[in-house]
Image (cartoon, rainbow, N blue to C red; front, side, top):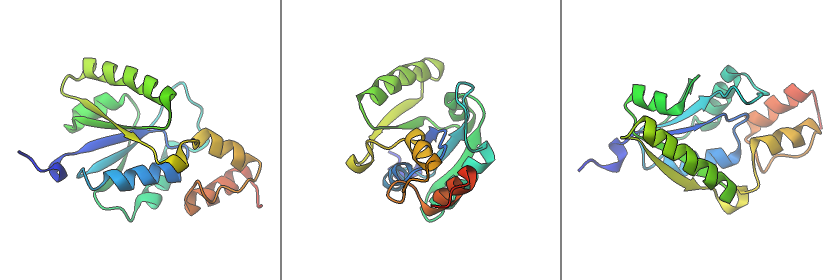
Length: 166
């Protein structure tokens, strides 16, 4: 039987921007997968504050000290990236029941498209259950204090985007 460390997994998302909740999840999962690929993706239905390249760079900076983590980007379905990369595990972070319902639907669709694919659900830490990139952007646009919620490189990038200096 393979050891857990030889198994690869994908943790996909838009990460617009990456938060301490995302970083915490990566830290906790990185000891189980090698590599753990944080896949920065795009969706036609979303409007992004940061470009794909900016989101990738912020993720790389924020995750640089965590072993077994690779940051990649993909413009398409996560399950297609998984197939092309030979990765059979997709990890999804869940904060609330509403997240779970969406992820259940996506897991079923991914299984239909790639039968060997398994979706693992990872629950966020209680201190991050309220946290979302959308909430972060809203607070940042008004110059609010986000020091408990986002890494310093993200705080600097948000200040620059919103031209706030509070």
